[in-house]
Image (cartoon, rainbow, N blue to C red; front, side, top):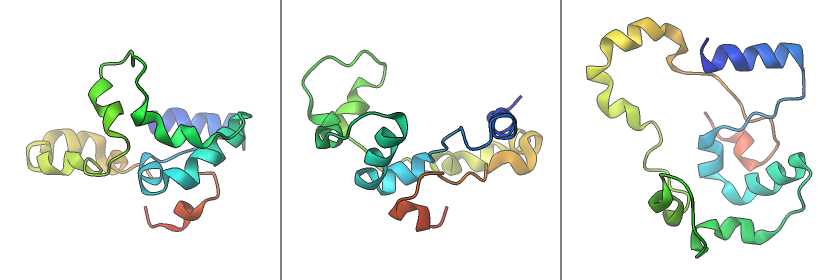
Length: 114
């Protein structure tokens, strides 16, 4: 099953219990999204969250260098650079190549076009 199939399943089984957050919305409005995400998770807000990329502690992930750069938008829809080479894959995926998902938290970014 694809990611979208799994998410559609949980939305049906547990309506209103799954919080959807589009990466694009995080990139466009991290200061607006981060407090809402923490609130939804029951974690108190701390503005230091927005300074994650400035921390000196070890990051145990393969994307350590990306973490240190902070949030950036130049990779949004980056796959489109290779679209001409992905023809057969795109045919197999069909209309699901674009997963129509809206962030379910209300912030300014909820009003930005997807």
